[in-house]
Each structure stands twice: as structure tokens, then as C-alpha cells.
Amino acid sequence: MRFKDKVAIVTGGGRDIGRSISLRLAAEGAKVVVNYRSDRASAEATVAAIERAGGTAILVEADVASADQVAALIAATTAAFGDRIDVLVNVAGGMVARKLLAEMDEAFFDQVMALNLKSAFLVTKAALPHLGEGSAIVNLSSLAGRDGGGPGASIYATAKGALMTLTRSLAKELGPHGIRVNALCPGLIGTTFHDTFSKPEGRKATAGNTPLRREGHPDEVATAVAFLASSDAAFVTGVNMDINGGLAFS
Image 1 (spheres, rainbow, N blue to C red):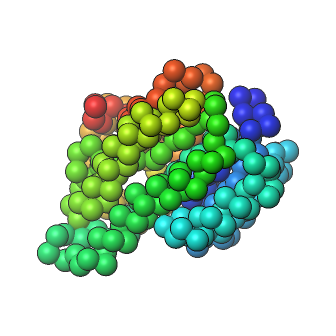
Image 2 (image 1 turned 60 degrees about the vertical axis):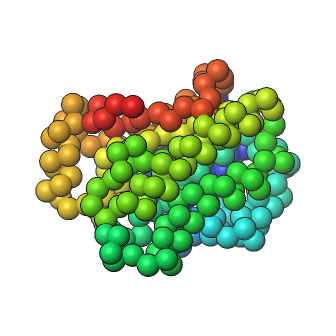
């Protein structure tokens, strides 16, 4: 029960990796704020699963690329659980679509950057007055942020690479206040993201080229998040941790 009586916000916490993180933190005692933007059914199912297991969670709809809606997310959190936020996990993100440079317009660039980078900036800034000594931020970057991503993923990869740099910068800035900031860089994890954006033959080939010869599972990402957010990682900050089965090394 590493998070007993602690308050955790998980943006994009209703499905896939976000759902696994929400369930894991709740199982270890956290009061979890499950944020979602559009998939209410999945988010409700996540909260229901937490409550069935005896945990505590609330559901908050918010587009975390909107400053006004982020303010409402933080307000709902403090109204439900008090003024302190102990764990912030910035999961919300996505590719939107695979597009080559010639196919992109400015609106597409702005949308992808807002979803994957601006969102983490806005939520972290809004949560900062409630984060104190011993609190932790974990950002969800991607292997794409290291290697540039696959075809049509250049702006998504760029945003995730920028999130890795933001992680390092905030670790330096917030460390003197006792706030740790780390990120995870998942490789091929079995989620609806890859169901949507990756071809089955490509996924099979990638898994076959991975030393562990398989895709990862969202629960394995959640385990790593729980470590980075807990006091077990009390001297770990500014790290962009790979979790890709050995597919690539930093």
C-alpha cells in the first residue's frame, strides 16, 4: 500500500495504459482521479472496477489541452480529496493520424502537439500549487520520442521527444521543492493505439525483433509507473525510462 491516503490524477486514465495505471495506483491505496475526454464508457468502467475492489476513485471529464478544462479538473480533484496532490501521471496523448510531411497542415501540427505536449504542460502547471515535498510526476513519452517514430508519425514523435526534454527540465526546476519528475518511454504495448495505427503484420514483425519476442502489456507499464511514483524511487528524477522489451536502448 505504497499510496495509502495519497491522491493521484491520471490523465487519459480511463482506458488502455491509463486504465492499468489507475487500477494499480488504486490497488495500492491511492484515491484516484480518472480523467477522460471522450470515451466515457471506458472511464466509467475503470472507476467501477476500482470501487468493486474496495478502492476510491472519481471520474472527471476534461480536455487537458484546454487551460479552462484543466483548471476544472484540478478544482474537482481538490473538492473531492483536499488541497494536496501526491501523484500526477500525464498519460493523455495520441497520434491522431499517420501523415507524411506533405500531407500535414498547420492545424494538424498544432493538434498533435497540443494533445501530447501542451496537455502535460497545462496539467503540471495547474497542479503545481498542490504538489509538495515527496510528490511525483510521471509523464508517458514513447520510444518514438527517441527514434523518430514510424512512417507518418513525425509530429507525434517530435512531441514525445519534447516531453522527454520537459521531463528533464522540470526535474531540475522542481527537485529543490522535493518534487520528482520522470517519464516512461514505452515501445510496442498491446493497446487500442496500435489496433488503430499499426498494421498486424508490422506489429508481428516488431514483436519478433524484440529480444523478449512479444508485445508489452499495459499492466507492465503501470508497474513501472507505480515504482517511479513511489518512495521506492525517492532518489530517481529526470529519468526517461525505456520499457520496450529490449527493442531499443537509450
